[in-house]
Length: 96
Image 1 (cartoon, one colour):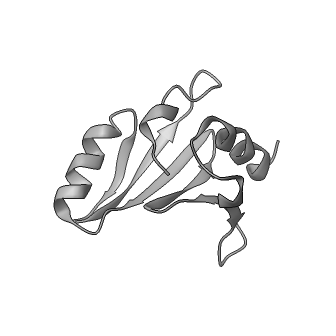
Image 2 (cartoon, rainbow, N blue to C red):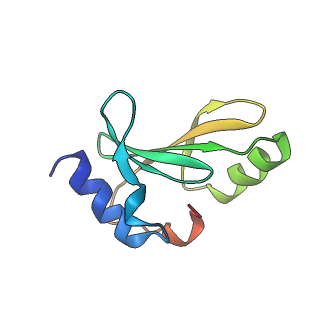
């Protein structure tokens, strides 16, 4: 499976439109949402969240406890989710 196939499978588990799967400016596949985007990253996913406020980012970090923060800024950040058991168990937490 390539990145697109993995993201398509993830997209079916999320409350998101299939139109959110598209290429970015560099040609990489991602799921684009209103508050961020998700890339395939090795065996897991890179979730980029942009809140616009420090409070929003603080709240998001509490919701994404299944992820590891890789970049933490005042109102945005990146969280890396490593998929261990072959299926995402966190689909209800992501609102794209």
